[in-house]
Amino acid sequence: MEVTGHAQQAAWRGRTVPAVERVRPGLWSVPVPMGGPLRWVNAHVLELDGGGLALVDTGWDADDSWAALCAGLAGLGGDVADVRGVLVTHMHLDHVGLAARVREASGAWIAMHPADAAALTAMTGRSPETSTEHEVAFLVGLGAPEADARDDAGTPEQRAQWRRLARPDRLLEDGDRADLPGWSLRAVHTPGHTPGHLCFAEEDTGLFFAGDHVLPRISPNISTHPGGDADPLRDYLASLEEVAALPATEVLPGHEWRFRGLAARTRELREHHERRLAELLAAVRAHPGSTPWDLAAHLTWSRPWSQYARRMRIFAVTETDAHLRLLASRGLVVGDGGAVPAWTAAPVR
Image (cartoon, rainbow, N blue to C red; front, side, top):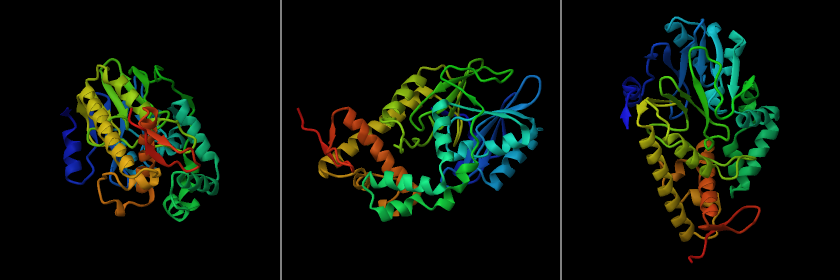
């Protein structure tokens, strides 16, 4: 894998946010800051034939993020009012968050995959109170004590911003072309990180807008969700194999930095998950009858398990659950069939 976004990587190492960068004629990367360890989202700006701009992802819905996006567009000689369309790679708040403000300021259309559009509609259609109870019940169903589940899920007030998220005007299925004059962007459905995650393959230049499907440094979180797909890790690994064969000249991810070597990076990610599956299988054998909540504590994470709480702990437990489901589909672990699944290694044949 070859790094091409050197300024982005240098900013990451320096714990700063990179500057707006011209990637190619008519294409810029605008970093939109966000809280948490990822630090920023790469909003990609495309100049359209006949005038106007398009965005691939927008950034987190916060005033400082909005100011950064507006300043970035001004820095390349544009304005939010120039935006004609927004391609959303997936429904997570750091990618779709500012789409509503962009549409309000410009009248731009917003497009995403039907699966994420449905999930987003369901999420924004619930009251914050109902949404909170929904997640608490899901976490309890994975083995969490109710008090811990409520602490991690947060309060209805913290979820109120979800109702401001923009629902799409347009839907893009796998293989559809985005309506962006001067560009030939084909939607590539890559479920796993979310059910409707989309990448976009630019067929004239070979550029590959990867969203969170393929990142250069970390593995995207692959988790189970209430009402989500039954085996998201299986979906993700299959999606990795699909995009590995694409003739990508450069990968433009939603976080971190640009790079070349899509096939090599997808291979690294598949190998990472196979190692993770082996580690989890060993944990199940050492602790038979454990729930996903219990088993997450026996895995290797980037920091001590005692430091995990709130959303980080939810991501860890639901990712553990996704790996358990794939092990089960391979016949390597067996659940007890209870309301809260307790897992045991399958008998060796």
